[in-house]
Image 1 (cartoon, helix red, strand yellow):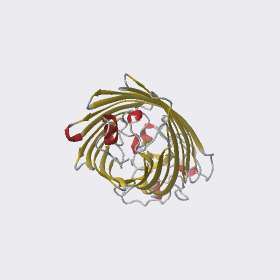
Image 2 (cartoon, rainbow, N blue to C red):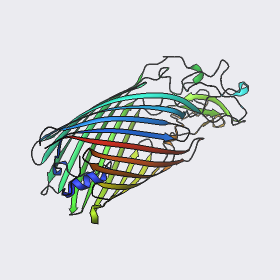
Image 3 (cartoon, rainbow, N blue to C red):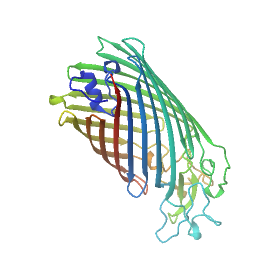
Length: 424
């Protein structure tokens, strides 16, 4: 929506913080347009690895003061190469060209054959997602919303439903929000879901049925306007995921006890349930010249042994009334999952097939490792007779602790154009 000079404090803070979780109570927002359309293009690129291109078209219809309907269609493509979990073979060795769900030649991997699984696997994936939402004001203190989403990829389908509501107190200076969401996902790997901890040599196309998982999330938050120029939001969320949680394209490597070279490859195995929780706090302050400072902190923990800290800071500066620029700094630190292994060691009898001391679960997915992540970004936006436009650029550096692909540099570019069709 187009920004106006005489907005309420809650509206100005909500618009300025953008994609932060923090937002002012919705009932304080003035409806200025009947229909908005957002057109967005986003590109995410990792150095010599994954590339994502995403195109979104969304519509928000302000039917009246009590009802807002919204919808969005998202299409994206993902290409490039991703770590399979296999260790890099000796430099003089040949590599097979199979994916983690394929077979590496008639005589197998390792040993004297000099055949090894590719540590980086090329892939192509496409996704289409459809979102629909309804936001309803019951009276001047109560609001509710319902959102549904369907997403379809080449090898993944997801169906989700979210319900939420809010209640205002204390002369609308305090807002309590709560929500519940659930989803059902179906995983259909290209060659079928292979047996967890199954030897890659034993893979057979469509040997196992598709994987399924169910997710439920609960959240509650409290927003408090502190002064004429500041507000704070605190909250907590809890979730449970149950079902097939392994990645069908990831493997773990067993290294030889003597040569320390890759000896065998097995499909990873993760627990079939995942309980996760988080608490967060976001603080916004309006400074002189309508600049806004936003600081947020989030602590996450789960029963997989991961603990993560996120510090997110933004500063928005108005340039010429209809133009603004926002700086963004994000720091992220997480511990490794209990079952993360860069590799399994034959010397420690950890071979899942023949070892006497195999782990109950194991994954070499670098996303489950100890890691630190730094993000720097900037956003420039402007409004005019044709609506609002903003351009965003961010660069991210990720540093893990173990594995051959523990370091990652990525860049993100996004442009969003909001068209205002009908005004009151």
